[in-house]
Image 1: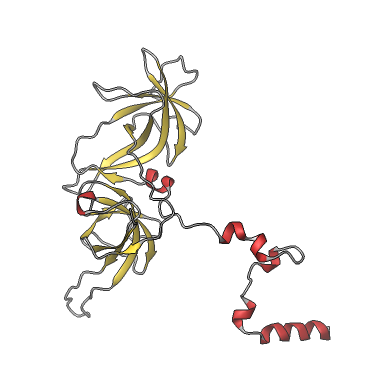
Image 2 (image 1 turned 135 degrees about the vertical axis):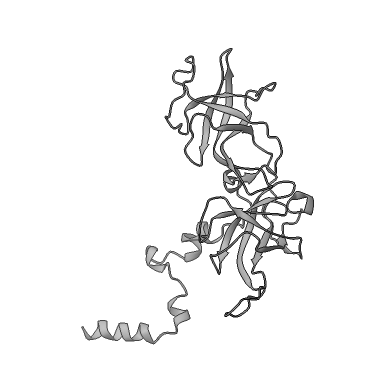
Length: 275
């Protein structure tokens, strides 16, 4: 009992930095060095762009005509015509799709399955990806595709469109930049308070030099208030760009200081990825 108590006193007397120098030590066996046991977790190279985050991000149509096809629903067996079923398609399932009028899909093409809902006034509609599918056989009745990724419920009647090419910059570190600036247009999902990982739309796009992987800050707009202190241009949140349009982009919130982020909040790019 005395030896146990003495050991506890000795550990408590150690500096906090010493106690926390190897917080995962209890997971190792014997005298296995930390460098060998946890190299897989600690030495992961920084990847600024992850394809899954980009493909799952909603975006604004900016009032442009989009090449929307239509999802006709799951098909089992493939020789049967798809019906207007409420059944949700899952990864690996075969679905039937209809390309837009006057167009066709080619075998091996990857298409996005998505919901299309009203967007901020003046910015068109919001396209919310629900999954990805790869085009396969084509019959006189329908074009078949296999679901290869799922971001949400995939059901009859959703939009189908070709995926945009993704340019991955590789394992590079962001570099500081100043601007351009814009403002928040709204959020992908209606929320009173924003959360880390949530996505929002901003009024800066490719035409202003913004690229996927860039980092932005959301600031507070200075405002004079009655019976309260005036607001100042302080930091509200930080985010990373996960989709770019011509005049707008989608950002994913990475850090939130004040979750009450409203449309009109100023946005400025602070870092970009070297090309």
